[in-house]
Image 1: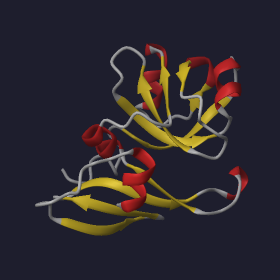
Image 2 (image 1 turned 60 degrees about the vertical axis):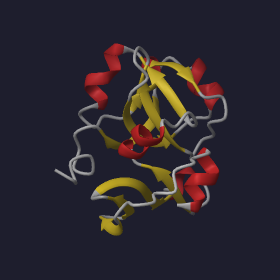
Image 3 (image 1 turned 90 degrees about the horizontal axis):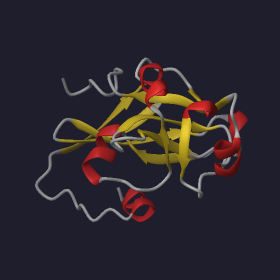
Amino acid sequence: MERIQEDFDIQDNLDGSFLETAEFGEIRLLLSDKEPIVMTLKRPEDLGEIEEITFPTLRGILRWEIEKRWCAVDRGAIPFLMNGADCMAAGIQIVDPTIERGDLVWVRDEEHGKPIAIGWALMNADTMDQSTKGKSIRTIHWIGDDLWSIDS
């Protein structure tokens, strides 16, 4: 939790929350009142140095209104992302300029700013912003997937 608080400027200390940890495949989770809010996983070998990355889940992003490491997609990309597809560069409209290749990033809809998916950046922010074809984000978590539905 300390890593997340520092990395994303989160003030929530989770007082009064029932906290537990769980494993979800290769992902370690922190759950607050049975809701997965933080995940820790290893960066894939093909995206740089293998290290453990801690990042909010989609529910964590909603809870804390995270404003770092995101990109916004147009309406046409949303149905594909909500089915677990990787994010294509053509659909990306706005990019946080701090994103580097190998970062975990979250994807939001351009119109409402709501989170849709989380994935590994396959490009840095400049390349992502200027590209019109190819995959830009390898999706690992999206609205409606098993991790999203874990508390149901």
